[in-house]
Image (cartoon, rainbow, N blue to C red; front, side, top):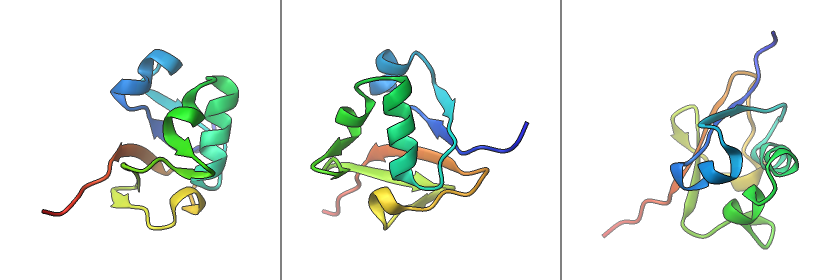
Length: 89
């Protein structure tokens, strides 16, 4: 089986997906969320607002906080995590 980006589902969203991890065929975060939404309605509303990531949510791809939001590219074997944004203080 070909490598696919792997999305780690936040615990707060697992009631929508029924899964901890979901493999997607996507080249960026937007495509990954769109595919998740097709398979598990409600995911996009939990992650996005007004065509961008919800305030307070960051995307981490391969251990690095993404700076491009929904346009963050994904490699074939990317690991994607949606996490609460970290604030300074």
